[in-house]
Image (cartoon, rainbow, N blue to C red):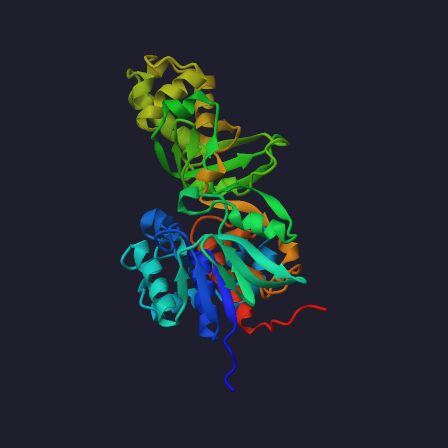
Length: 419
């Protein structure tokens, strides 16, 4: 007599959910995927500014170094499905890839829809059924999953994979429903907050320089004791509310407990030059253009919208002649160029974050299988877990690896009840 396929329900049609559904179906499970959105991979389609930064083509050690929160928990999943495995997987399902600066991997087409479309086709090939329904609750009895209650119907299951994402980009379907369903089954939810999120500043200079993008700068984040908690080279952006851009988003993953700490950014506008070399250049400019106004001199060193800010901060009259600049003022100018400081008061709302930090407490989840330690047959994948990483394809790699682990385990784990 032919053995019945194990019935698996995946809640959430994002990156982790689709990978979980494919992985379970490849191992013979009968899979239903519940997703109420009009299309799958809605958030995936806007990642990487619509290009989809699929993964990061780096060794495991480097990948781990880019996961500031609960990286050790992910070690098993990331070891068994590496970034190299991810690249092979996507090439095999018809998505040619390319590697760009910072080892970031994108589809050759620069189109995120090609990634989500290939995942959807692979699910169809494997017989995964997409139900346009919103999950309301997970049905369990005697500590074991037995189905999912949806708004339209109930779905029996020997395994349920919860991959609903976090709270970032709620318009894509990340509404926090997954947290509620897990909490109802006894799981601890670490309070969600934005990670990879812009930062708010009360410094009026930010609004003055709104729209200014700085490239090739070094941003260091200091706490109230002057200790550096983050430092990296790259790009940042001034906005009407504060600061944003790749460096700021990455730094936000390190900034927690805002009620206990005061943070400030220190921006080195000329990281390629030592203070001595910068001083030599400034002295040469002052000497060769001694009769020019200081605002004109500064235009050779700074973006135009920064010049009034520097003049105001250093109390240097814009029309001051270069030959009238005092030594103390020149020294102060050098320090400001190498240490342009901006206080920050907190992150923007979690809805504006690229990803959510917080979620299912990882101590309650088996790191090898992604199965709940509290409810047999319940698995987790992706952003719903209390893990997060920096920008550069690392968060999507977490989605692929945890989705793979959950899908395989859900299909292969025996469904008998715990005694």
